[in-house]
Image (cartoon, rainbow, N blue to C red; front, side, top):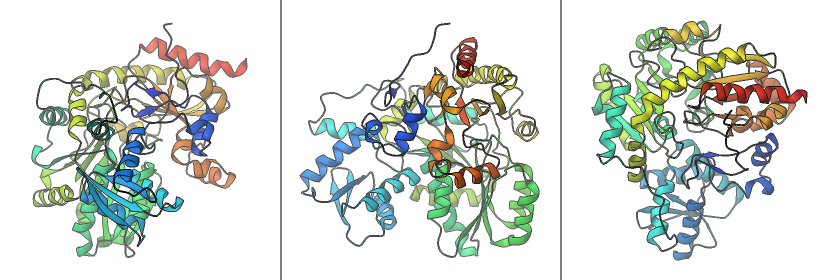
Length: 504
């Protein structure tokens, strides 16, 4: 067995200042990171950008604050007026000063922990934060960096290259209504804000969250609705009867349904055909995000009003670029065109060098997905028969396969995600596993994370929260695995050794 590289706590994966993956190799490191233990946090200088304040962004904010004589204030940097105005509204603070510095908007506010926290939350939820490559360029231009990290280049128009590959991955997408965004989260945020502008004048103020969805999707539904709007959460994406009951009760008030196919982390797939029928009957909008499986593996366009995808996953498979897309289904005619127009007003476009970086690697995406699919099937077969695993959640599981096959582009196309309920202590397995440990997925390299610890530490850190998760069918100690492109035999052997280690 060749073996896997080892990474210290806080190490960037890959070894690039723009890596979106950060190593948290032990459960103690994960807990220390969540509890803001300085012994852990001092090593984490970059990582998944919406959660970790990048070193370049921090240095640039300090430099701008000094130049503008704002050293007694907290300083946040936004890439556009739109993003700055959103932050100011979210802060709910009257003592805000807005300035400009070069191409950036500068928001200065009292240096209070609650306001600093809210500013970070806004950029996390809206996904409109400054690119690390843009910060690098500005630091370099100011003489604060000696060099810039080189980008991958393929010699072609980068935006056209990215768009062409997306159209190839999902036949039927309309290039005129395909919107590239700074992150996958920004794609959802912009689409959702635009949809609210469409639906509120019609008296449609009820949103349905179908399935246990990604953290920031739920936070947007919690924090960005108006007082007369509300969200109804249906935790089981496969419970079509519950969805029908909400439509029967709320009817014309329903603005839209938001789901992932499959969901994160339980890999459930909603009955999209039935959801489409209900949305058509009540003129509601259907948001579908297939990021966990990838556009290469599933076809959701026939059902969705908007298809969302984090291009950081599978397309940006080296783990060093952030981007997202929102594709408005042109089969909806004028609705799609108007929605696209409004979303353009709400979205934050990608930074130019991020487009270059994605264009340099997106040509490998189909082959990468094919390899990951084969590896995932082999690893799932091994884990489903291992005594140290209580359950493997995946798209071809007993309770999920039928729904997934309805949207799969062909057989044996699962994507790279497996979620494991363990029959052994979490720390014993997690600490001994030889793979990259951290959030994100869809990379060339195999990754894993104790997903609920990173996404919902507020729940796993106390008994009541853990019990709440169990009532939703979620093991608080589950491990989400993102299968990579290494030889399948080596991946399986890595799991075999980690699962056996608890007996030593």
